[in-house]
Image (cartoon, rainbow, N blue to C red; front, side):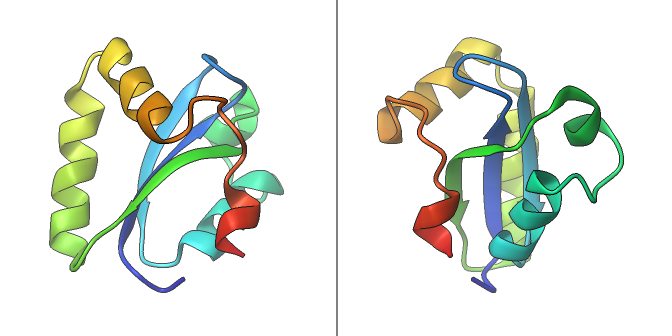
Length: 95
């Protein structure tokens, strides 16, 4: 999936959240899942893809990512649960 995307990963339902942006969602999530990305997601075990949104351009994806990062936690959880109420790992949906 080589499309600009904003995505949210979680360690578990209602667990630690990570918000990112990428032009290759499959590859980027694979890196998070396999621990090949040093930093926050590896340290806190944040590997479950729980939400993503495709965009027309990288500029709009980056703008959306920045906006969501400023939201309070309750809004982020609501966004996830609107499309994924069981917090299912969506990785198999994109590969």
